[in-house]
Length: 294
Image (cartoon, rainbow, N blue to C red):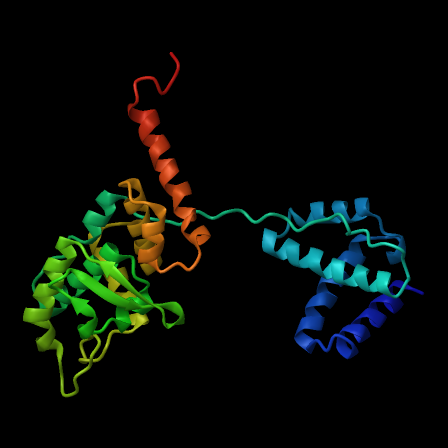
């Protein structure tokens, strides 16, 4: 059989036996067409070395995720050839997907946070924005959690807020004195001025008296960033990462941070140790008298 015969039989198998959709099959086709352009020999004579050479060429053209998709497509095809006994063993048996680079979360330094939160307070909206940003940084809330935060979920007396997070799981998060101070001012002196005809349970209201949306918060955050003079990109997640990183740098234990962030798995929270360790190393190298050999 020719290359085309093997491939067409495989595509038919994907459609009739695996019941895959047209879009998924097309994705396999594109990956395999790319491979057949590279390889000159018969597909059933391809070796492990051929595959490794092919992957090597992809590294100059694609990111890790795309390369791993190609590897997965080839594994599916050669597993099919093996199951149909066109070949005795797949050339990809010992080939694993590439390891993804661990992306460290972006975060702000403490001085950058101070700069961001130095919001001039003149209008009701300024006090709302100040309270929102202080709460965001003080608690590490997701933006979806912040905009859904209800008046009844804030306990000013005990300095805590009750959060309903992913999977409708509830957690209690303490709130620091600074955020509590501005939150109380907003609630007692400014929130009522934002209420229009209809009242809402959500704590933070927009200029129409309705609950602020995620898009609305992002717009406000971007304006505050511009006015603060900070040039780096700041997203709600950057504030969340800053909260976690600064806690860890200050000596908080990972399990407590996990609880406050609402992470189900401690491994998700572990990423912050890499960030904090970098900061600790910079401090050590910069200030310890025996950090460097003379």
